[in-house]
Image (cartoon, rainbow, N blue to C red; front, side, top):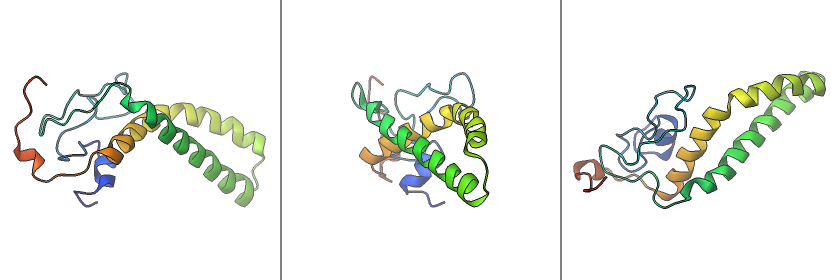
Length: 131
């Protein structure tokens, strides 16, 4: 995957501005600290919460991820593989609960990438004081 693209930042948990620093403190979404974020990028100083309540919009992205998963599962299992919809529901509900940390992180990384663009010169700048 090409560095410098928004997809690179989203998939690899990297800062959207310099794509060097990690956004979340834990490398995996499946840990107790799945929701803990760094306050800023250690490479370029980009604040990961530009303003209070910034990530409320990421709930819409998370909702879209859940809907896409449910619709895809429905078409794959019910329409193409002829699985009973009730059986699909019993398998899908625990899967969605287990995917919650992953969707949470993907939604936040996607949301900040909408507003912050890649700047290859950013990693050369020192981190701002007070971060």
